[in-house]
Image (cartoon, rainbow, N blue to C red; front, side, top):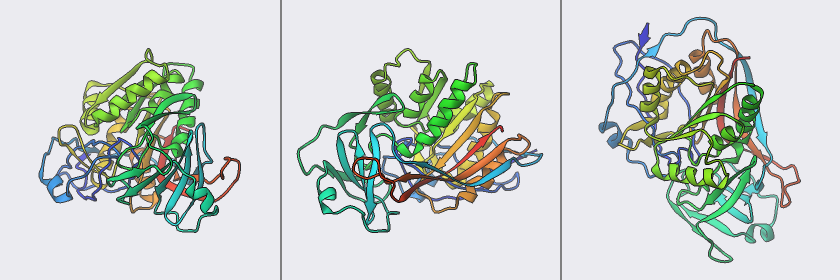
Length: 374
């Protein structure tokens, strides 16, 4: 039996398909409910149109939700997944709605609304920086970079989990990677390497491709989807830097909802699915995405895309006013009858001082929910 997804909206845009991001939602309605519009917008950066205008623009045929039966998966909550830094990154200090970070050779200051406390380090550390983001303090708002010491190039080399890629000073404060997600990437890498068989990974809202390259380097066949041509181009640059040009990666610039609906019709299946949707965004042809409205449908389709030996579904959500319970319960409803366990909570980064060796305060970055078969 099929049900149409609910209609509810919250606005927000992001370029990336991740340039940092948010999530949440629940519920279904009767078969007569109005279908939701599809989506896939540039994650992270990208200025959003007003919600009213966005809703008035396109609409595409929507796949109805499948009524799931059976027991809900077991749960593991709350789960706090913590990173104290990795590779060329660590969080030095935070406070006064700012964060002080090390990205390779550069020390950077960016806005961080959740840093409600006072900084641990003094002015000497905070003033001795290479780049400061100023301007709009909204998560994906426009702004500019100031370089106190000397003008810096647009890009610079970075490395995480053995993957080389480019950092970039974007007008949306992001630099091309969300290091708190390394905990998910490490998990994915372990799953791929331990499978002892070919593993297919689908990375929705894949942004600059670091997660896709981690999966490919571990031996997976990867399909990377993002609505931003710039993000896809950046990801291809990163692929070359990581010397993975021969790796089996499909780079798809398309609306995420349209893509997964087509994959379902074609019968294509995946073992691991990562999805990192923005709160609000647009696809390459103006398709509109509202997280609270379209997330139930997205997860429902993702379940249908799983192979018989699926290894997991990972959802992250940024910059939304919601409890992790919202996406946790949605994930459990979506995976009814599939067994396994749903673990949900927050991703946090731990301050580690100037040298990256201390253990300071934990800074929350996003919500997440992850289904695993056992």
